[in-house]
Image: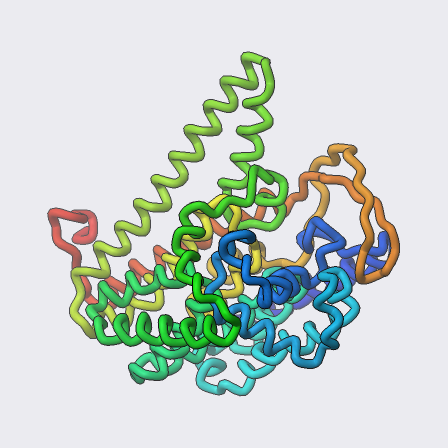
Length: 425
């Protein structure tokens, strides 16, 4: 990365944080893309903690968190007085302790020298990780995904060690169950021993955790996954997301409830756009899988990180309500994200920690801002970031695929002519 490029990005980040500070001092709450509910500081952590001792965690709350998530929350709450469990809202009086505890895995990454060496532009990479909107958003929510990121870093740094990789990969899955999708890449690489060990450690870790927290029904999380629904909260889905689906669903719903013929036709058009977009991103990944499959074992090992990154990005785009903090998991592949000038620029657009109002709906809500301890008023407005982030993310997905394809050609990994004739051009 050239010096001028670093200076430009640094200047924009400084301006972004100056704007955040000015906005907070003027309005007593943080600007977008921080959480739309100003009363929800650290509640991702406290919700898990709240249910850690409740036997109804799976059949009442319908949790999709494995038992290890609840056990980790309990371990992190060791410095909190016992009486805070009587009221979830009281938890936030101890928010600073949660903040310090969630910083532990982030600070630890700095000392993983092998991880830093993965990128020639490691200073820029670390700045992107620590000061990005997804990471700050995850900290604001107190989301356990930060620990998940830490486990994944250790897992991939020890990929050649079957036991260490499988153990830490299992711990990551035990915090965010959807990461089990990465087993698909291991399957394509024919790393069946890693698959077996990862699933074995996953069951053992969560069975032990379930025994400790008294959750004999934890296997019901599988049925909860298929029945999981957060309701039709379209604004919340689109507020800080990297998927078009939330925004399209919101527009489709608004047009669908209208009796106007124009609105009805536009609603149908949005539905077509939504399905076309899903088919497109799925087709791109299918093409990547096809290219990957035709390589030798050594060549596939060189390309596995690309395919894993593309898979996580695909998941983020095809679901409606993936929170913006899920982007934190992509930072495990920071080397690939900052590989080219195009990818760095799109990454910068996608994770810039601020946004500006595009359309003000005039709907005013009042709540309490935990950070300022005061009542605040804000509107459900359309922010530029709600549109810009999904666009930048999709383009980043395309750039990562192009970089993957270039790597394929560099490794002389030629696909079958029946499958992709233009590769011979």
